[in-house]
Image 1 (cartoon, rainbow, N blue to C red):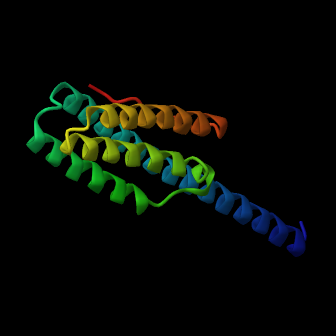
Image 2: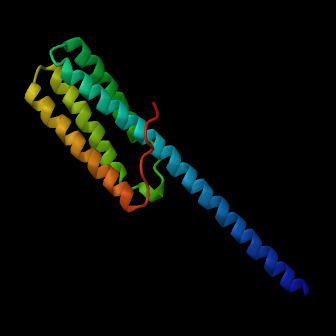
Image 3: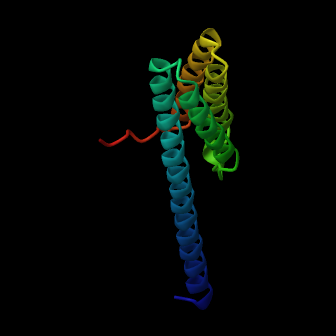
Length: 143
């Protein structure tokens, strides 16, 4: 085997190894994003349901509003992999609607609370649908 042929094989092997490493890294990043998104959605939905059952508790509404606002801010600073970048605005809309719902509850506006909560659910479905189009899904919560 000639020296040029050996070098060509080494280059091809190097390129393949680098490509595999980049693919694994991209999938790992997508996994981290999906895990984080699942947690944010699960907590937001749980708190909204909890508040709905206790809508007249203003102090609870204020606490949940603070948590919803912090969750939204955290999502705004997430590292979003290019594979799911088109889905991320929908995640932000879900969390924004949960924040607005909690804010409405602090003011005793039950109707607005329900509207924002429904908007959040609708955007959640859209977010999951967009992820599915790109071949991703959120991990299921474990008990």
